[in-house]
Image 1 (cartoon, rainbow, N blue to C red):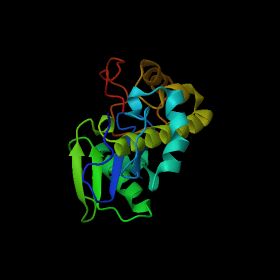
Image 2 (image 1 turned 90 degrees about the vertical axis):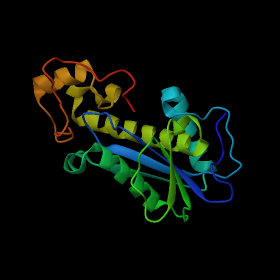
Image 3 (image 1 turned 30 degrees about the vertical axis):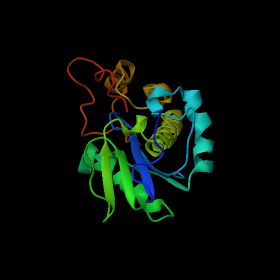
Image 4 (image 1 turned 180 degrees about the vertical axis):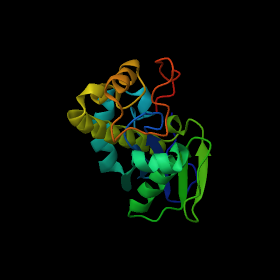
Length: 204
């Protein structure tokens, strides 16, 4: 069962990102503050949910949240500062947009760049342990998927409406045939010597 809070009596924001392992598109992060007594029978790590369930949860999360925000970092920015720093920046941008003062940030993973002077806790597999991080993972994932579907309309060769920019064999084959787009991350290895996908489980 996921937990409703980490530290009792403080305003906590859960943060998570989507798209870190992609070859194309932005990295997207969300920050969500939920009521301290929030519970949900279905909400979990977005990777454990079906696409249909994720989208069904979006309105529920937004309605229940005390505050929520979503932010992106572009492929160009990713190339300039690297994907790890871009992930932190996306989360900072989401936190900046919250209309509530945050006292504690819960971050999925084991590393984070401190946000202002706010305390934070890095929690491995946090999106399957805390509702606020799980909610952030759902909002980030669905928002990024929607962005990639829109980009796919202008760049149909890359099948972003189904692979969402992840390094599938078909995606890399399309890069080999048609070349990269302005939405590809040029600092990434777009075409290794052999067309191969990232290790299973790297898609986040």
